[in-house]
Amino acid sequence: MNRLLKILFFIWASVFLFSCKSEPKRPADYVPLDYTKEDVIKNEINNIRHLQQTECVKALYHAVFLGNKDVIEECVKIVENKLKVAIEQKDFIEAERFAVSLNAVNALPSFYSQKAIVEEINKDLPGTKVSAAKRPVTTADCINATVTMWVDKGVKVQNGNMVQDIVIGSGFFIDERGYLITNYHVIQSMVDPKYEGYSRLFIKLPADTETKIPAKVIGYDSVLDLALVKADIEPPFCLSLGSSEDLSVGDKVSAIGAPIGLEGTLTSGIISSVDRKLTTMGVVFQLDAAVNSGNSGGPLIDTNNKVQAIVFAGIMKYQGLNFAIPVEYLKNELPYLYKGGDVIHGWIGSYGNTKKVRTVKSGLEIYYNLPGGTADFSKLSAGDIITEVNGIKVLSLEQFQMIMMKYEPGTLLKIKYVDGKDTLEKSTVIYLEKRPEYPTKTFYESDLVTGSFIPLFGMALAPSSTTNKKLYTITKVINGTTADEMGFSENDPVTVRKIELDDTQEALIAQLYVQRRKKGFLDMTMVIGTSYDSPYYF
Image (cartoon, rainbow, N blue to C red; front, side, top):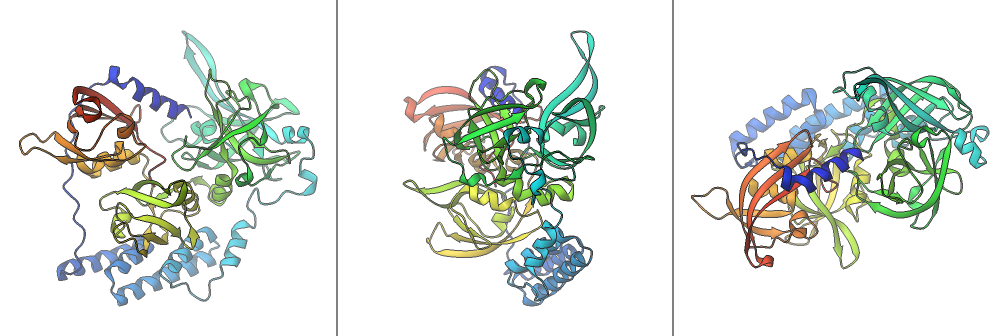
């Protein structure tokens, strides 16, 4: 949340702080492969056989679109063998990736049992079961299932004096073996390769706040701000994970944590909203229960003492503006957190939003595809509406993102969509690439201004001068985007003067000279900005 506020502040203040830099060189237009040419086919077969050595699922993906049956069968056999090896080595998450990919091309082998693999994945998974003896009965039990996260970062200089550098957060046990959940930003210094200082992680129990118990990070997700931690103790109680899909606005909830270091604090309130877009994937809950620094990572429980969300942010100086991550996201990626290390999300290189007919959601509409990205390679186009993934109906952007969280990069999926041109329902397969750390930079650096301004600001541009390469005309403005909110319209002339990529603030800033039709074509120099990531990128 601190990163989000930092970016928002920079954008709001950019009119006064902007320092112009020259626009970097842009790439040439991406040219799709032409499979009618013999030399292209030959080169693609060579590329596929090269990919078979390191990325066999991606090789299968390319083979499907090449359409050569012999090459497809060759790739299928390689992925089948990888599936067998993964099962033999008991790497069941990897086995599931291969199986899902084979199923996407209707080549799932008879020896594979999805039920057996899922059972193996869930066998020792934390959070799947809590014994009756460890299940909280009272609110006091829930408090005793919550801990204070204590990250010792040594000392720092403050006002000329050396002071102890401590990060305080909250966490809660989900397993009798000592596994617990907290926020990534609480334990970030323990795993962030960019951090080079001292860092040690401990927990404190509510019943013994003087003892610091060593703990270690098992898995973490910087995108969803979640982390799985383990301490070598048997917890007094463990919280059960609920189903936050059942929560509605107005439902009573309670947050437990250590605000400003006050261990075992419980605050109560209601769910104020269930669909705030404050993270780059999915939505979060807004609640009015008091949340302060130190609450991060603590549980949000319902009246049945079940975890419905994980508290991750509160906006200082504003009462009742606090937020929590729905527990469904945690449940989706627990296998990957338990597997260990950094959880990497996949994407198809697209930008879009929920398609609504009046107020009825009907799918995920694509506004833009990254040139050469997997959505583009799979022949998806702007205007297409994704309606199904692997047999699961998709009615909204959020549903699509929830499904994506179940699959690792390197997985092949089957997608159904409504073609935006002829409105016919079609199907295709798509390969999940690794979501880049900064998608905005990827869009900008991989396309011309005319295309990249669609995902960056919600407006399409067309060159309007053969002599002035910085002069454009707006050809489309997407409702609800930055361009729309700032009053841009189709046919407005725009001069793109400067563009700055600011890695420190994680924001892209553009300086424009515009004549807005809605403002009587008044000449004006404007500065608009966007963060390096967005919940509308997928």
